[in-house]
Amino acid sequence: MVDYDVAIVGAGPAGMTAAIYAARANLRVLLIDKLAPGGQIVNTYEVQNYPGLGTVNGADLAIKMFEHTQELNVTFDYGTVTDIKEEAGGKKLICEEGHSFAAKAVIIATGTKPRMLGVPGETQFAGTSISWCAICDGPHYRDKRVIVIGGGNSAVEEAIYLAGMAAKVIIVTLLNLTADPLACDKLRALPNVEIHEWYEIREFFGDSKFAGLKARSAKTGEELVVEAAGAFEYIGLEPTASAFKSLGILNAMGYIETDACMATKTPGIFGAGDINSKHLRQIVTACNDGAIAAQAAAKYIGNLE
Image 1: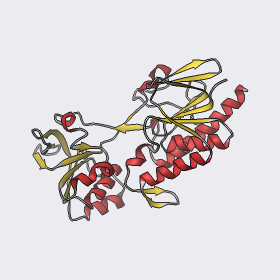
Image 2 (image 1 turned 45 degrees about the horizontal axis):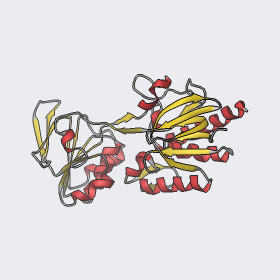
Image 3 (image 1 turned 90 degrees about the vertical axis):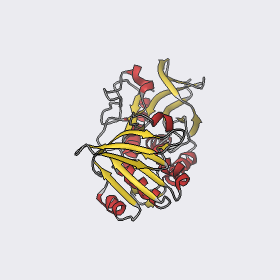
Image 4 (image 1 turned 60 degrees about the vertical axis):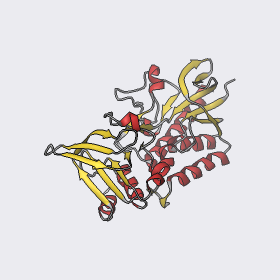
């Protein structure tokens, strides 16, 4: 007998929603993640577009979602899934930590991770003076100069947050600001924010201590030197599904390909959330995927029986 009816890999909004719907379908559910539940929203200061909640702190929203799973007796465990193998009666999830789980169906909701620039100095200062989480590391730059790289929603929203504590926030982006117009207007109205659009980051500099970055204008070739105490990067995301490459369910970009029911071409394996190949990656679309994947998994399991 397998341990669970459905195992959900990844405890972000997609995974937690899938867990809620699967539990309500009377399935034995395992929710597994290598980190604390919440995914990317744990590191988001403000979520302003989740229906019914107005403005809410990302970590608070994650806690509420996880508490909902626990009210339904969903089993949560820590683990880094490195492979999924077929075995009698279902799938075997193999974890890096040395343990494994068995389930009749699997929903992969591992999401994405922040993309890096790949320029000189980045690796040297990554995790110390270069960060991808303003909530985590923003307080280190109180009354200091700090750089935000990127022009999308994450970059603009986190820059607004940082402007509330830093002496100066300098935005450097390869394109122009592409975030929601209201957020861009709010950012531009802040007195301690400086914006440099159409600049390509060339390198981060500093000897033993981070000192700033050098960039070049994509329009004029002019060099820009920005001195600051630290930097935050928000330049896009990369899929985190390399562990499932052998299943043959990934596209050329590394995202999971699914049908409208979130089913992959491998029977019993479903994808949900930002890890899927899709047009819009938002909390609401991740929750949508999770609900559909759970219902599809329940139907799949019912047909096995």
